[in-house]
Every structure is written in structure tokens, then in C-alpha cells.
Amino acid sequence: MATADPTATTPLRERAAWRALEAHHAQLRNLHLRELFAEDPLRGERLAAEGAGLYLDYSKNRITDETLRLLIELARESGLAARTEAMFRGERINVSENRSVLHIALRMPKGTPLVVEGVDVAAQAHAVLERMAAFCERIRSGEWKGHTGKPIRNIINIGIGGSDLGPVMAYEALRHYTRRDLTFRFVSNVDSTDFAEATHDLAAEETLFIVASKTFTTLETMTNAHTARAWSLSALGEEAAIAKHFVALSTNADEVAAFGIDTDNMFGFWEWVGGRYSMGSAIGLSTMLAIGPGAFRDLLAGFHAMDEHFRTAPLERNLPALMGLLAVWYGDFFGAQTAGVMPYSQYLKRFPAYLQQLTMESNGKHVTLDGRRVDYDTGAVYWGEPGTNGQHSFYQLIHQGTKLIPVDLIGFAKNLNPIRDHHDILMSNVFAQAEALAFGKTEEDVRAEGTARAIVAHRVFEGNRPTNVILAQKLTPRTLGALVALYEHSVFTQGTVWSIDSFDQWGVELGKVLAKRIIPELESQDEPELDHDSSTNALIRRYRRLR
Ligand code: G6Q
Image (cartoon, rainbow, N blue to C red; front, side, top):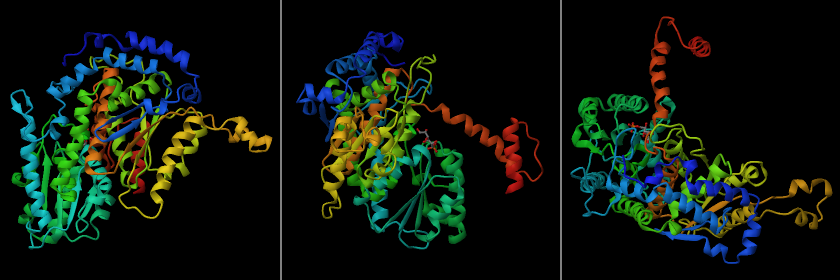
């Protein structure tokens, strides 16, 4: 297990800082952001931090300097610095899987070694990146030919979870930088509609499938990969075509070979790359094909800049640490159950979905590293939509509902497609929402507007709804890398305070096992003998009758 501050072994609720935070919360919980801003005219400039090209305004949080001091003390008592160092050194901090956690090694500058258990893992990562770059150049230049001699024009990534959400999110986020003459599609769902819709207008002779699967055994991905193989073969006729139209991203060379993909066309990674932390590994091949190897290096450089910021910046100015600690503050002290992430960028439309896996698969845990049930809340439910769209649907509940929902608002100074005054309108909404959520509108203000007495209460905004505003100059590959790493390390900070394993995902196993048992019961010609619970039995029988 990782070396950590000895106080970190003290159960969380017995740590001095936790106790102090409880008492502090009781004092502060009714304090309004209006008062906090009135007291300190410089608050908006003071409670802000910068790193890796991102500016974080966290002044509209329900905190005082004392809150921050205590939260930082909590991070210290939780051994954040030691655990961070342990991760960066490659110690096996993923205890339930006995693995190192080294996504940070995927984005280290070339030539900087990181030797873990006798292996330079950074050099390993660069060797794969170089093979990926050479492959991408061959596809992008048209040198790589399909089975009938035509260049590849369509690229379909088949993967799910961590082998899908990062690539999809990055492709959408960086679309501005992509080769528009290449078509990219992503197939994840085992619902055959996903495959059918992704391929219906494509010619197999111009289509390359990337089978992205760390284990190369995932049911959905292997089902889709076999369907893709059959689809290609039915158009191209010969087994030999597979070599030109399939590549694999995996840690499992044996299974890749067994599937029939030449391991020369396999790009590897390692068990120390978790699925949801893998978009900078070979899993990013579709991203590299879309934006090119140079821009992919910029993406990695953005990740690395935030990694270094997180590792070296004092906690008082450390963006991921501050965001992680604020998440603990709202979740554990204010009882907030969810957190909103609203990117004011259409390109980031899949960012909330990506973050849902990152945050909820990482921190949706109920036992500590040593297996004790926690007696506090862990990871929140993350959700979101791009602004301004969400404002016209669910923001009502954030402004006037009964639930406290801390929100991150993400915006950019420059638009990649500037047209007329769209961008100023877009960004005015970022600032206006943060302002409205924090300060609201008082009953006096509503009355002063001459509002009919009967509806005054309906038009009051209590305010005191917390937000973080994250600003960057422009959405670039580099900015995207920094933004993803910001959330990765915020998740890590939260997991460290909670003493949970943010890098395993045992919670996805049970459903998979049960589905494997049910598949033959659905497929069998004869009425199967069922011994599930009465509800599951009845559902299976009804399905068999109805289909
Ligand atoms: C991510 C999870 C999970 C995983 C998928 C796909 O952290 O481990 O989402 O990425 O289950 O797994 P394979 O890449 O092995 O197909």
C-alpha cells in the first residue's frame, strides 16, 4: 500500500479537521454569498486560481477563509501530498486490483524517464505513441490502402465505457481541428441499432474498424467487433481483407490474435492505465487519426501541464485540489447529492457524459481502502448539458428548487466559429447564471418591480447557490487535456479524503455475470427452466412470448 501521512489512517470523521469543519459548518451554513461579497470587495479576485491555462473563480462558493484553511488541513490530514507522490511514483495505490495508477506517465514529455518496478513506463508510452503516429500518417496521407486498393475514408471506433467515452468526447470537443474528409463514428452499444446506423451509408472497402478494448473480452465490444468482421467480409469477400480493415487497441495480445487481427496492427497499453483514464493512451488512436499526431501531442502536453500543476502547486492555489475539496464540502457537510457541469461550448456536448464515468465510476464506492463501510457520503451524481440549452430546461430547479446543486460553468474567451455577436451572448449567460445563482433576487426587489402581491413569492430567487467558473482562452487540444486532467485530479483529491479506491470498478461486475447467465435463457429454443426471483422469471417469460 502507498505510504501516506499516518494521520490518514485515522477514520475520516475522527480527523481533527473534519470535526472542526463540522463545527464550522454549523456556524456558516446560513451565511449568504451576498454577505460574503459585501464584506470583502476583493473576494472575486482573491478567491481565484490559475494553472495550466485555466482560470478558476471559486469565489461564489459558500466558504470563508477559515473554510478553506480547514479544507486544506483536511487534505493534509488525509495524506493528499503523500498519496499524490505515491501515484506519480507508480506505487500500487489501486489496492483492490493491486495495480499502479499511471495515466500521468502517458503524457510525460519525451525523454523524461519514469522508472517503475524496473521499467521506464514513460519511454514505453512514447514508443507506442510513435507507432500510432506512423500509422496515422499512413492513413491520413492515403498511403494505407484498403483491400480493394482504395484509401480509408471512414473510421469506426468500437469500444465501450472507458474505451468509448474519452474518444467520443475528444472527437466532438476537437472537431474544429479534425480532418473533414474523414468520417468518424463510434459504436458502443450492443443494441444492434448502434452498429446499423453507424455503417448504413458506408462502403466497407473504405472503412477501418478500431477495436478498442483493454481486456478484449468485453461482451458488447466483442459482439460488435464480430458483427463488424462479418459486415466487412460479406462486402470484401476474403479473410485477407481483415488485416487492412481492422486494428486493435488492447493490453491482451493473445485475444487480439485469436480474433484474427495481426498483432502488428495492435497498439498496446498496460494494466496501469484504467479504462476511464485511458484517452491519452493507444485508446486515443481515433483522436490522433482525427486531429493528427502533432495536435495529439498538444493534447498530452495540456494533460501534463495540469499534472505538474497538481503535483507542485501549493494547495491554496491548486485547481484540482480546491475543486475536489469543495466537492467534499458540499457533499459531506451540506448534503448535496448531485453536482452539475455545464460547458458553455457546443463542442463539449459529450463532456458531461465523459465526466459521469470519470467521477461516478471512480468515487461511487462505499468501503474504504481497507474494506470498512464508510460512515459519510462519497461521490456525488454528476450531470450536465451544454449551456445555454440547459437554461431553458432544468436550470429552474437549480435556481428555485429545494435541492442544493453546486455547478461548474465552463467557458472560453474566444470562439472557434465566431459569427456576429453569438459569443458575447453565450458568455454573458455564463456570467449571468453565476451571478443569479449566487445573489438571487430578494423579496424587496421583486416587490419594488410592482409585482402583484400574490405572485411575489414565486418570483423570489433565494440565491446562495454555489458555482465554480472555469475560463480558458480557447478550446484547443491543449486546453482540453488540461480540463480533463483538472477533473481527474479533483476526483483523486476527493477519493483521497474519503480513503476510497478511485481506480477500481467492481460495481460493474455483478450485472455482467447475471447477463451471461440470462443470455442462453433468452436464446434457447425450448422453454428454459428459470430459477431467478419471481419478477425476473416473469419478465423473461413475457419477453420470450412478445418478441
Ligand atoms: C473504466 C472501466 C470500463 C471499461 C469498459 C471497457 O474505467 O474499466 O468502463 O473501460 O468496461 O472495457 P474494455 O476496454 O476492457 O473493453
